[in-house]
Amino acid sequence: MVLLSITGLFRTVLIILGVIVLLRSIGKLMIAKRNVDEQERMNRELNAQRRSMEESRKNFGKTTVSKISKADQQGDFVEFEEVED
Image (cartoon, rainbow, N blue to C red; front, side, top):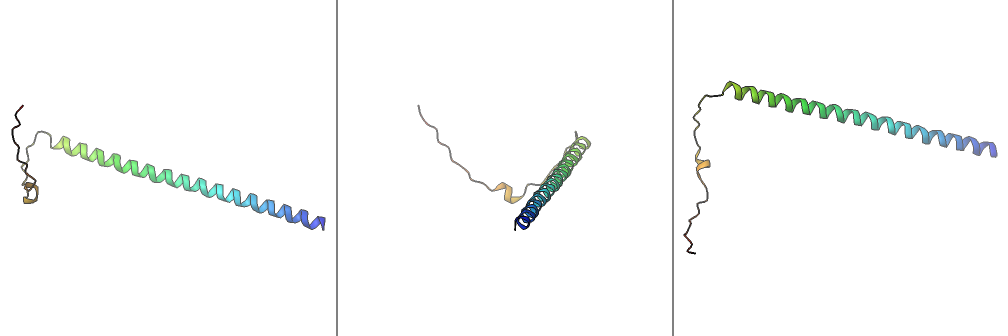
């Protein structure tokens, strides 16, 4: 009886340790994946910023005329009154 309970206890401890090690390794993998995704996002933003800067340098000093759409011309007009002090 005592031998069976010792082996059961040992087996339970090993299972618990195995689960802990497994969860820690999965956690480290998830952190690594998050870091890689964050680095890729930062690189995309940096490349977009560089492209924008190159485009603005290329068009520096040039004049462009853009058409204003009807939707942009509509707005709320407010009538102002002079207030006497």
